[in-house]
Image 1: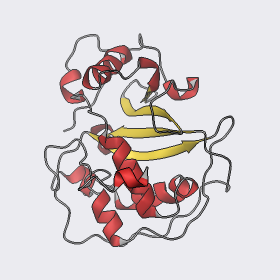
Image 2 (image 1 turned 135 degrees about the horizontal axis):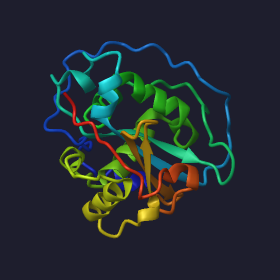
Image 3 (image 1 turned 45 degrees about the horizontal axis):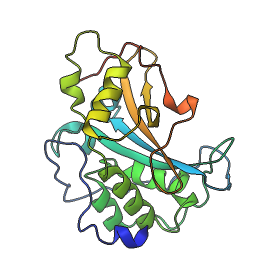
Image 4 (image 1 turned 90 degrees about the vertical axis):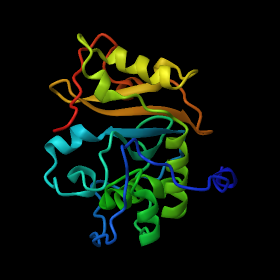
Length: 227
């Protein structure tokens, strides 16, 4: 897999009208684990892709790269690539070091425009599937770049929008992708938060577990387009 990644000449870009990386990136604090170390075999992966306008609607820091609009207006952005266990809780917090280098952060910002999240995702998830932050984010960006993401802002205007309509839009953008591999995360009030594409150990899409799949196709859905 890493040999294949070496053929990719540039990092993938998030779904955005444009992306410019700030000249200066403020240092972030070291990650503090929010749960126990859990080193269990990896049986598959979940690609988590967040709908940025919904995140920014409730964000505390609206002056951030992701939400300010100065560095780009983002759509679906890479949250992370999460290793999963065959059964039970997934692996997590396998290592806190090494920390991502400034170069690794910069290379990832047009895909994941949140500096602290780049370190958090590596430490909580990536350290259980790769030996360095650089290797983890190279894999995550590569898997993310294999997909095309629908225009969710345009889809939001559709009367009677449902979760099934969003899944169908993802399938239309990615012919051959199966409906059962597309997880959808919505808020308690029915707003789109995230897409989750389930994969096996060979990074091929597979059917999601029920708790990852999310609501049924018939569930009503709302999509925030941004201010």
